[in-house]
Length: 475
Ligand SMILES: [Fe+2]
Ligand SMILES: [Fe+2]
Image (cartoon, rainbow, N blue to C red):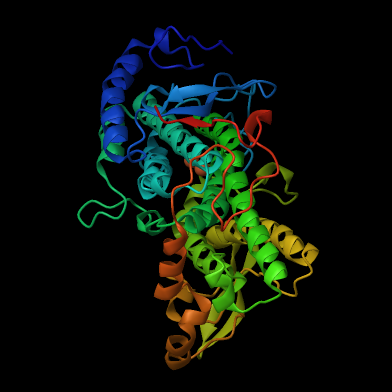
């Protein structure tokens, strides 16, 4: 593995200097990327010096360095985890054959589609979050937002590298398209619906980084199994950065809960009106935000039965989560999996060929993983002595993709009539009033060590810096 050459324009560990064609393609794309960052990156932040982590190597012991940098000067680099000598394909019809170092012609279109779909989510989330800096609850949180944003930018670079290096002219066109689509734009939207939703406030941001960045984790884990070795190695390194994004979400929601519980105990009340008058976010509203973000995010895994999912697996493009740890035959022909079906308006389990249900398999793995953090949030509530439990909603709740899109289901899994749904939807999903209340709390707190009233300070700072460190210098 070569070390990173910082004398080059684009930091990398891929011997970029020796590949003049690729270098030229990327150096042409880079100014367009910077224009996109200018237009769609964090609002009004170009001149701030931000205490950021920058990837400088793939050595697990010291892969990043921290320092104050202006975001447009961030060194977005290209890093792949080291290759495994003689890596073999370990699932699907090609199991046992050598992993591909290049794109096989017959899988070209599907691989390109997978890479573009993943790549499209990265700039999309930056666009969704671009106004949040104006209402940050603290400098610490502002820094975390910017950290997530620059790393999503680097994830875009990671996918663009693959497109430029392995997909020729089509790849270059797709790389341009990634800078042209816009989150929420009616004419040229981002590919996946959850990435066209707004992230209007910081509670939404924390929910997004907890739930939706975790979808990213599961997609990247599935791609890290790919027979196309460069894709596997790129996504493995992206996962290193992804962990912090989910930490921002889990600890962010946890701090909102901690602050609310403290206010409930001070005021000795669970009355929503009194808690809102005290300027904290009541637990039922937090539950409704969970219901929204969880349901929108699990749609991202796609239809519960999908012949594409089967083809992607059998042809070795995309594995399962932790494919290598599973003890079945990794081919899955003849295996079945239970999915939910709707019969006479009721939910019933049904066995289907597992290959066709691989979206559902990944969704179920995701659900297991996301429940963990919710349990940790519950421990905060329990420790405060408050009898309230947060839950993730039933997986049939508020779905727009697949079989379950056809039924109205309450968070507890009961199929309900349209009438009941309409009467109770404001108990289950954030209402306009909830959103307006949360929006009303959003002000800008930027004095070092100060925090907005609705959120508790973190237990510790970033990279062992104190909580009141000057994470952002505004100049
Ligand atoms: Fe990402
Ligand atoms: Fe992320």
